Amino acid sequence: LDYNCLQPEVYHLHPNKTNTPFFRNICSRLPGKLAWLTAFLMKAFPLDMSQYSFLFNTTRIPVMIKDQLNTNRSSKCVIVLRRGYFYSLTVFRKDGSLISPAEIHASLEYILKDNRPVAENPVGMLTTVGREQWSLLRSQLLMIDGNERSLLTIDGGLFVLNLDELQSVDPETVGKSFLHGDGINRWFDKSMQIIVHADGLAGVNFEHSWGDGVAVLRFMEDVYRDISLNAWIKPGQPTDASIDCREFVEKLEFKLTKPIEEAIKVAGETYREWCDSITLRTLQYQAMNRKYLKEKNLSPDAIMQTAIQITFYRLHSKFVPTYESCSTAAFKHGRTEAVRPVTMASNEFVQALLRSERNFAQLRLLLEACSKQHSLLVKQAAMGKGFDRHLFAMKVLAERRGDRLPDLFIDDTYRIANHFILSTSSLFSDVILLGGFGPVVHDGYGIGYSITDERLGFLITTYRLKRNAQQFCTSLEQSLNDIRTVLENS
Image (cartoon, rainbow, N blue to C red):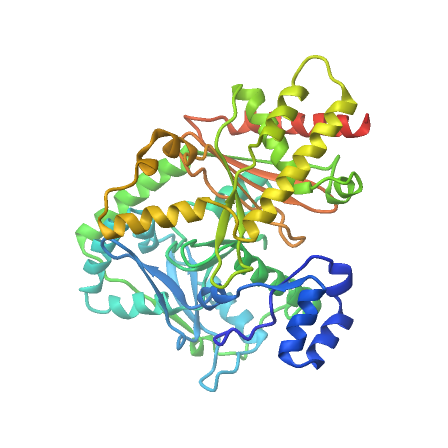
């Protein structure tokens, strides 16, 4: 991982041919340059993996003006959070070897047996405030004897493991827990938090400045595959009483002044108000799936985006700037490019669909045009032919040089075009039930979606006072039904 020599991340255009043990075996036996050419000719493209260096041991440090990303490769511990208290769980021995699954199991049970009530002053709450305020408060914490060691231990930890006491199967309750929780048992500066509920349901919350969902998704898939194949610890398995957990577990303490305690209290009140302002709804749609849409020769992603456009137009009678995240990991240090799903083709289909009289044959042709146009936009964005990041880079360069911003960047058209009322992103994986994020503007929708061979899934977030997530969710189901009706009758 340190040397970017992890098993390569590869995009397979024809996975049936190249994502196989036989093909990997051939490539492994060829010289490097020839193996790369063979993969390229077979449409198997290696993706940039530079983000993986920040997956572990990394924290976003609050600093005035601009934060810093710090990585400490020498750390050998995982940070465990329970009831707002911090614990350091050492998982590597001095020789670099991992401690055993039984020792990890016993150590976690040891932490769970700590019967202290919920922390009165949970320091993690400070990671919810504005970055400049948190920078000042962190400086105050560091000036108190003993706190520096605790903070540096947290900063350098592999990741944060949040042991929550919530037990729920309600998708909205679970989604809000993984998205924001109540702040007491969180440390949002960490590159990655693995949140585990009391009933074993698990999710990941990650800080976004260091990387994107592709790196976290790879981690989740590898972990899921490993525990499924090996089952290191079985449900109900008792811990080994002979293990001295004090060898691995250390409680991390903080000394607080009255002003810091007051800041934590105010932060908690503000954060709870913000959490209450967020509405989250989910939709699991099983009348269509990835296989069904492929059989209809349509892009599943295009259909998801078209359904979102139908829904918004039905509710608000207009089209708005829409953002879809597209990975540019095909390039060195590539992050994302914006796909703008609103096109003349999508507009024509949406308006034709919502007319009182429907011509299913015509609608099918219009839907196919939507699919082709959207697929082209995604391909262009992934291959570096988008324009949003290019314009953004020019704007930032002009600002850094102190130049007068070109008229383009101060025009209302540019401002409106980048006010993404519909912000969307997808995660395609069979190991994830749902994924999502908050709206990126005050009057917007945050829409995470997934496509599997069994279902289509959506997670929708809004600010309660501005938009109605439940109304959108209900209308979205109707939109999917409308699309299916077109496909079944044409």
